[in-house]
Image (cartoon, rainbow, N blue to C red; front, side, top):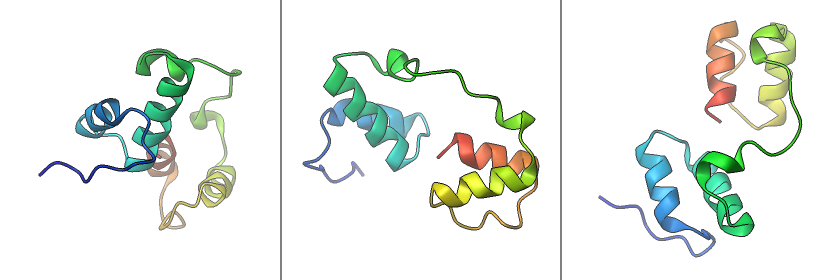
Length: 90
């Protein structure tokens, strides 16, 4: 069943493609709206900005703090690899 159209989405077709590829609702909306605003493809939107360290280099406590900052739930019982996966898929 197709998702209900959301008036705040700037590029609904890209949003649906990203959702079909497995992106979360928030991530798909963020990427599709950024691409529509900047006039870029979804592959180039994520390349803007600076370089951040890899989550694999972070300590578990720092990963949990980041998960909390992002509003993720059920992160306290996750191990490092599960936290990294959750943060990347957010």
